[in-house]
Structure formats: C-alpha cells, structure tokens
Image 1 (cartoon, helix red, strand yellow):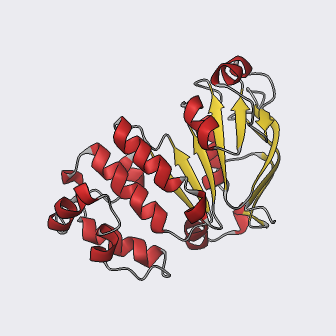
Image 2 (cartoon, helix red, strand yellow):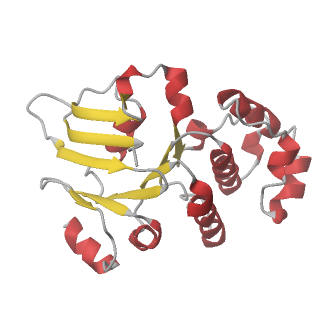
Length: 242
C-alpha cells in the first residue's frame, strides 16, 4: 500500500546554531490510518504540523512527500485539495463573516467532486442541529457558538476529498458529548477510505483508543515513533514523554 505522506530525516531550527527540532524524524502515513503527535508544550507539535501544511516558506532539512511528490512541488490550489487542516482557531477553518450556505458553496468550489446542496449537507448533521442550521442558512457563521462552529467545520471536513487530514486540537471548544460525536465520526475506519489522519492532541487516552501509531516529541532527545500501540497505557506514554 502506497504512503499518503512520507517524511524522512526531518529537522528544523528557527535560526542558525539555535535549537534543532525533530532530530531527523522519519515516519509514514498510510490510507485508513490515524497518527497522533504527543509531546509537552514547546516540543514542536504545531511546528511539525506547519511543515506538513506548507513547507515552502519554512526552511527545513529532510524530505516530505505527499502522494509520492515533494510537498513543495504542489501549486497552492492542488495542495489545498490534497490536504486539509482542522485547527482550533476557527478563522483558519471557516469564513466567519459569510453565511453557513456561502461557506458550504466555497467548500464545494474547493472540492468540485462534492455534488451535495446545502440542504443535503445539513441533513448529514446530528438531528439536534439540523433544524437550527437549516433556519440559519443565511446567517453569518460567527452567530454560532464556538462549539457549533467547530462541529460545522468537522462536518465539512468529512465531505472533503482530501487524502490527508491534519487535526490541531480540533475539539478544543467542544463539550464531552460533541467531542465523542466528532471523534467517532471522523475516525470511523469504514468511512475513512483512502484518507490518512495526522492529529495533534494532549489527550493520550483518546490517541491510544483510536490511533494506529504515535509520534512522541521531546525537548532534546530524538522523537519516538511507535508503530504498534497495542499493550501501551497512558502511564507508559507519559513516562516516554519525559
């Protein structure tokens, strides 16, 4: 099975002779797999995600291939169709000053294979939200709560045709009920299809429950890549993070 993402000998530093992140990190993401990045604050989790989103503006050493092609070889529109980011910062996911329907129309422009109308899209939501969001069709997205915006973004992500999903603390504004709903929806291997998920999370238990592999980042020591999580418990991971 071909890799969706292949990273080899990745290292990065903000300035010459400054601290080096990742220390030659190598890993692969395959279709229908979920990978978690775990580490204490300041170990470079968000920096690693940025490199995988757009490594044309951030100097680094190593190789990053997306569907066997260098990430830097993609035009911006091509890249936006091949990989997608669900961030904890809503303004990076959605157009808050546009209506819900306008956001959906822009999404279908980005992913032309999506043929659903807004009404069909809303019908895929949990029943409790359908009536409200149907009535808010022409309302600005910022009129929804932060949690509702996050859920709306996650539902749109599910409809995308991108092969790589990058999730950065994607449940930061959700309660436990909606966190469980979104996680079970996005991580359903039956519907994941050809996609791979790469997520940044502080929730070790969630990562162990759903993920196929885990990358543990450290301040100074080289990263650990666990390709088989069977038998590991949260306390084991916490010890490896030290």
